Amino acid sequence: MSDEARPHAAPPGWPPPVPPPGAEGWEREAQRWLWELLPVAYRRYELLHRQPVLLARQVLLQVEAELVALRKGYRSARVDLAGLEMEPAVVEEALRLYAAESDRLHELARQARTVTDALVHGAAQPGPGGPG
Image 1 (cartoon, rainbow, N blue to C red):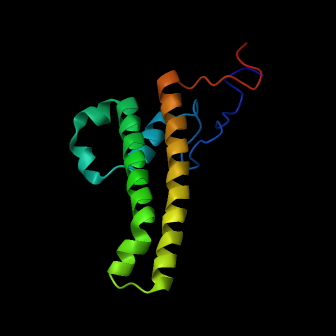
Image 2 (image 1 turned 30 degrees about the vertical axis):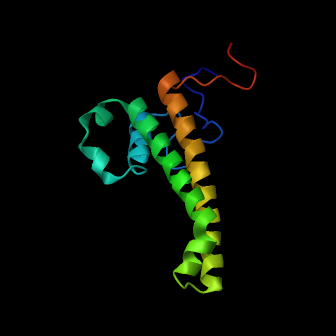
């Protein structure tokens, strides 16, 4: 089977809404997905529109910053929320929220790294046996 006839497979960690590398329009859809992960204010920077790898890097930095904030919130939740006179059940619910959001952000970071790799190295993805 020729490379052109072979269906494109998504690499492990690839975001589900984005067509796999090599599929028609995958880069455009990857950029669209990346934009959804940044605060809207970043859209005013033309450089990020022209440089998808820089866009992907900024997404990774944003997700990492969100994880830092989440860890801080988790560590301080019991004391801070008790000081705000929150009920213990609310504090426990907040801790579960932080844990769920941490899982989501770690998965987003994994997906963003996978997209970044594809943007940097192009659509060519070596198979399980390596190239050639």
